[in-house]
Length: 59
Image 1 (cartoon, rainbow, N blue to C red):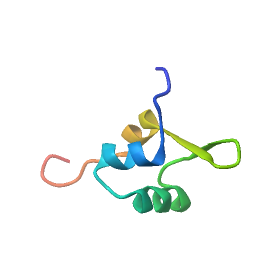
Image 2: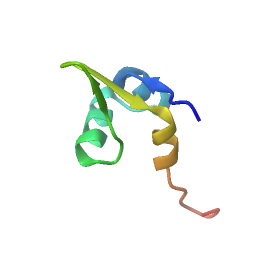
Image 3: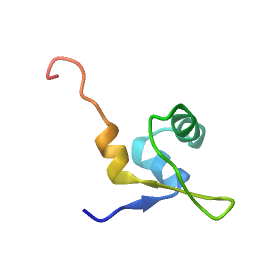
């Protein structure tokens, strides 16, 4: 499956959280961030989808 690269802002919108939450998730190791140069950080949305775990009644 081809990678679906997204910025921190786009990933935050995708998950419905803040940019700060995405940065914290990267720092905690819950998702991986990839650098392209010194400042540009991209996240693979396929990895974000794969990191999601179900919980609750249907889990």
